[in-house]
Length: 130
Image 1: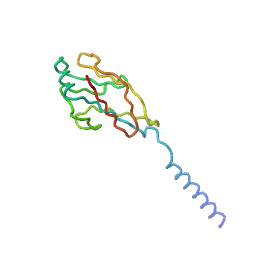
Image 2: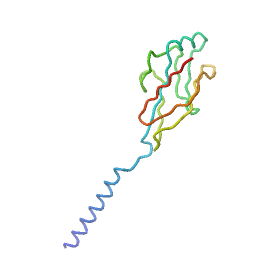
Image 3: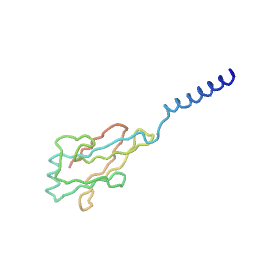
Image 4: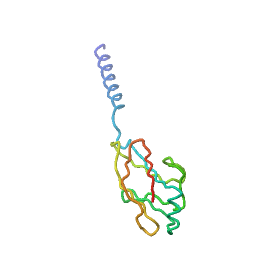
């Protein structure tokens, strides 16, 4: 009887250590980073005066959103702020990733392009200037 109780306790302890060791595993897809695009009143006026009505945003050749060219910010918005153009990327198990962005007008003319760095837990603010 003592031998059976010992084996049951030993088995319980082993199973307990297996479950507690799972707390340190890395979950794929747990990292994400964001960028927000913005421009000033001066840039908005320049665009509107040249007939630009809409800006379309692409990241890694995927459509990410659009907004009226007349909309502007007095200072950089936070990622996810109302009416902002924010892109959030799943970084998987990496902590950062570079992606190409392109901003086009309503006629598909490229106005801006560059690299955005998505970093885990960071909101990168990209100022678009003319």
